[in-house]
Length: 161
Image 1: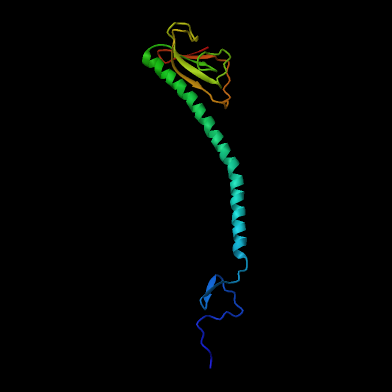
Image 2 (image 1 turned 135 degrees about the horizontal axis):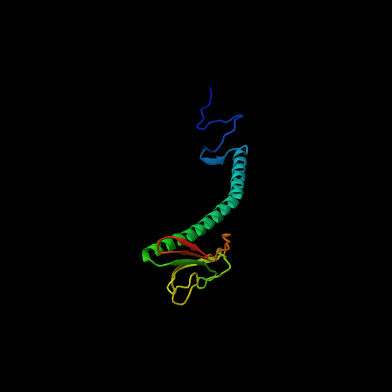
């Protein structure tokens, strides 16, 4: 007559996990597949992280440059609209400090938008009204030109200096 057991007899079989034999928990034998898979997953994650970080920083740099170029374009459009709206010449000049115009045509540092009140074409005088200024913070846009001033007339036409 066979004896009946309250627990399974495991002969020549590998039991994965935890079994309860006579009220005692025991951890069964494992063949190491879990740790191998964990190492593989960590290696894949590390590879994706190392490959992704430089691409993300390049994307961020491109986005910053695009925003600065858009800001410069916005200032030119603003000057054009203000000249038509006010019926006065509005000048945009290259500037490195946001207070004075530079005649070198170095537009990558920034620009000033002002209303020509004193009649001196392209020159920021004490009676001229500054409407806006744009200063580039650190990164260069690569905007070089032989033009120091762009002036929009009251009729919307443009004069380049």
